[in-house]
Length: 322
Image (cartoon, rainbow, N blue to C red; front, side, top):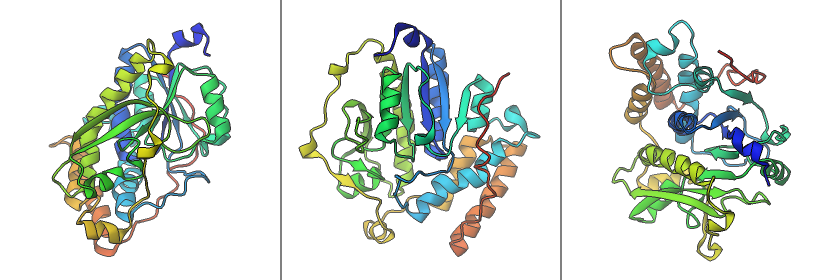
């Protein structure tokens, strides 16, 4: 049990990685947490996967959700000559968020190699692409009031990855996300359900649209759940009915083709990044448009994902102070 003085600190660990949807979520969540009197701390593993994360993503997903963010968006946003204000971006990079809100930020390679003995009010895993070991889970739980994961599917029916694909393929009327406790033994997507949000399944066969549609819903769900954590008892949370559970693996390219789905298209990817990370009629918009067009054309024409110049390293930077 966490001491009272720890709860008063209201430090909340946010476990994040280089993921475009996740970045959009924390851009909306962090200001809310701060306004609510909480102190977010970023634990960022960048593009690093640990040995327990064995998911092989679709190439189309890897390109539009991860590669463009790492190769184009983050270097663009962190480019000092243009500056934060000149970009007029709706969303900031991880470094810009840390700078703007004076957040403690840790870049780490493997979450299970870090010391989490620091007292916390709670911890949230947000589209995090590393697996927590039982030892790490135990240490975090010993020093915080809660440790929850934001899952991109409704539970227990849609455990696993890319749940939006499987929900649409199964003809579900609703698609949604769940916030759940991280199980002590590290089993994936099995902990008690804290909250869930859903929307009508989109007609679009572009899966990326389903994820972006859930971003506002997930921000509200995360923030309200954190507020409720101050008054709710652990017994208030519902255990999953494991008899109703199903675990889905990443679909193959052939399965996506058979479903008539694609994760993202050049037009959707371009509009997504330019609208969220720049503003029309600005120098930043022109620069970003040019960089995105070049990278997308290379990928779509030749199936080539260009090398990234070690922008994930070094990982020693731990704090910004204004």
